[in-house]
Every structure is written in structure tokens, then in C-alpha cells.
Image (tube, rainbow, N blue to C red; front, top):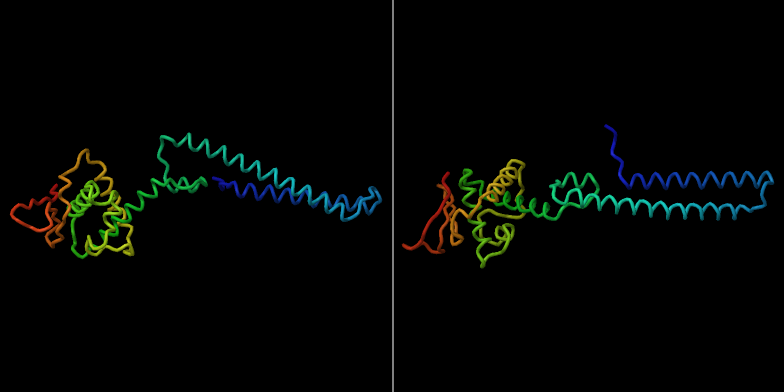
Length: 222
């Protein structure tokens, strides 16, 4: 399979060809001067070559700009109802989809929270319970509107830091957890369960800050 050529490379090639053409034209003109074919000075020849190069550059740039706009319009139509990955968009020379960037940041933030909880040696159900609690806060009007903002609230989740390094394995697990949460047809529990206890035995959600006889508890058990 041949190497893909970018529009920048095509543009550079056109400029290179234009430069070579201008130089060749200048050389021909100089030779004609030397042979007495035309009565032009060297300055006139250079001015002509420069004018030709400038005109060709402007025309070439305009063509490249028009082609890029046309391709972008075709891309928008082609992928209007079709998912395109960040890698594909980057390879095609187009800016990444902000929605995809936001999703990747959400996954990274979840993974950073998981890294902070690593010392508890939690299982998958505990991480799912934790994520349900985060989503409950997102659905609750007194908390932020995104999973990222909920998790990043200071002092809310033990061990969390935006500087936590995320391993590929943790990122993959976080991506699967988010897909699992999004696949739920309805909330798994009431949005009142916004408080979490992180114990060695597991993660447990509750609906009151202080534990009283009226406190209800919830955790996922699959």
C-alpha cells in the first residue's frame, strides 16, 4: 500500500514545481540575453520570474484551500450519521470531534479515580457501585452536571488526583465501566444515594450523610 499524501505535502510539491519553473524561465531568459535574442536586463528577468512565482503561489494556495473546503464538506456529509474515531479523524487531517474528546476525558477521569482506590483491591462490582454513586450525583440537581466534574470535586473520593497516572489496563476497564453505565435502560437506584462508604469489604452507597436508623444502603451485586 502506498504512502498517503497530505494536502500540505501536495501544496509543498506545487510550490516546488512552481519555483523550478520560474528558475527555468529565468535561465532561458538570461541565455536569450546573452545570445542577443531579447533586449532585457537581468533585473527585468528577475522581476518577471518573481512575479510569475508569486502569481503561481497565490493560485496554488487558492486551489488547495478550495479542495480542502470541498473535502471537509464531503466529510461532514459522509460522517453525519456515522461514528469516526479520533485516530481516523486525525489521519484524515480533520480536527477531532469534541464529543469524542469529552468522552475520552471522562474515561480518563474515571480511571484516575480507580487508581486512587487501587489500595482497596476492589472487584468490578465495587467499581460499578462507585460509578453508580457518581452518576447519581450527576443526576442530582445539587451536584455538577458531568461525571468529570463530580469526580474532580475536592475531597470527595479517596486517593483521587488529576495527576494520577493511568495504566492501559485501568483505562480499558474504565472504558468498559462507562459503556456498562450508558447501556442501562434506567437508573439502577434512586439519585438520593449520593454518599459512599469505601470499606475494605467493598463500596456501599447510602442516602444520608450521617448514618442513622433511617439511612438506606445500596450496593450492586450481580
